[in-house]
Image (cartoon, rainbow, N blue to C red):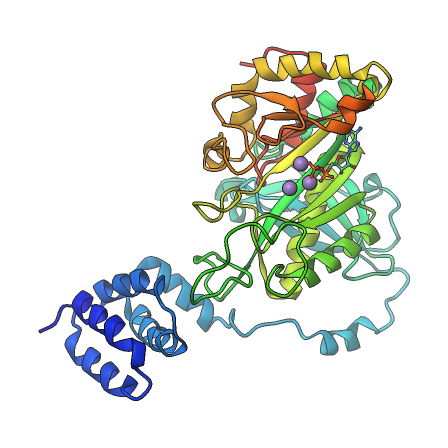
Amino acid sequence: MLTSRAACFILFKTSTNLSKSNATTLKHLHTAIKNKSLLKKSLLLTTTQRNSTDQRKLFGILFNNYSNKSDCKGDKLANKSQKMGFHYLSSNAAVLQKYRELKQPDNMVQCMYVWIDGTGENMRAKTKTMDFEPTKASDLPIWDFDGSSTGQAEGNNADVYLKPVALYNDPFRGGKNKLVLCETMGYDKKPNKTNKRASCAKVMEKINDTVPWFAIEQEYSLLEGDNPLHKHPLGWPSNGFLEPQGPYYCGVGAFKVFGRDIVEAHYRACMYAGIPISGENAEVMPSQWEFQVGPSVGIAAGDDLWMARFLLERVAEDFRVGVTFDPKLIAGDWNGAGAHTNFSTKAMREPGGLKVIEDSIEFLRANHAAHIRNYDPKGGVDNIRRLTGRHETGSYDSFSAGVANRGASIRIPRRVADAGFGYLEDRRPASNCDPYVVTEYLARSAVLREKIE
Ligand code: ADP
Ligand code: MN
Ligand code: MN
Ligand code: MN
């Protein structure tokens, strides 16, 4: 009796000219292989070496056959989502349009309340009908939700309050309809422990007179496939390899960029919503993109970026494409993803500002470890995979700063050094950082000049 690994090896070896013998080989394998989970492992190993359409088909058949019966937890989940129709469910724009065109009563405005859930990374939303068109967040009532379903409360005391804090036009529903960014509050009306906005807002209030500007470069990657547990970048071949990094950054052409429709749709959605999106570009890793939001003043920087992330997820959902903010999606020679934060105060933007920038950098240096711990949602662990000192990053364990240096923690753009005033770029925040936390720490170090433990 063959072991599955051996059978798989034979399959791999013989499959270079398989076209006629597919059926025979498959039959042979079915009888030969007893240990199915081992087979699955071998298949996974060999899938990286597949190189012909025949092989690809054959591996596909085998993988499906065996992974369906596998007792691996991940596969069970994947199969479940397929059975639930995940694979087939896609938005039907033409059909939906019929309903979108129905006249909406003047006294019924859809307000979608949006909030950050207990992961500190994912967002949730639900809708409330109002009988007027709100013009600011505080026009809207406090609402609540089941925090035990979002990692934000225990089941026996599950209600968490939603406090509207920022209002945007809804680009999906159009008309008078709104998106409402909310803070999460406990029954005692104190910030929920997952609410990072409340303390940020206090710090921004304190430094209000310095007019702090933040502009965040949000990098992200697009994902395809029907298995959310296998993160496959959009457009990457399932068979073979991509050309190494080089042609993709700001690229153009079908084999250089993947998912431009999503980028275009997102850009327009942001502008419609009222988010000060300042640009976009394709990134160094294929199917990775960036958009920039800002400069926004103070607390608005976090609000605007969170809402821009929500719009991105929602736009990509229409295209049945996934979004990931994982700071190092693909290990090896592929760039990670960050959220470079460009920062200035009024004094930095005026003649002589370079000196203020340089002084602030010394306080950022002194608090480096605290910043790293707070620049991703996992206490710095996520970012360590990315801040290697390679792939245009500074190393997580040593602080550095320099003019035009994209391998430093802090970069002073060449333009700024030449002019003698402007802003600094903090290159350390991970793509999945909480912008409320990042801007709060920048304010405390660079402006309030605190020594943070
Ligand atoms: P990079 O060269 O690092 O890729 P980007 O062009 O992507 O830079 O992003 C730079 C961001 O900095 C833009 O969003 C821009 O609006 C913003 N910015 C420009 N001037 C300032 C300033 N004085 N303070 C804060 N942000 C600024
Ligand atoms: Mn950029
Ligand atoms: Mn970038
Ligand atoms: Mn940058």
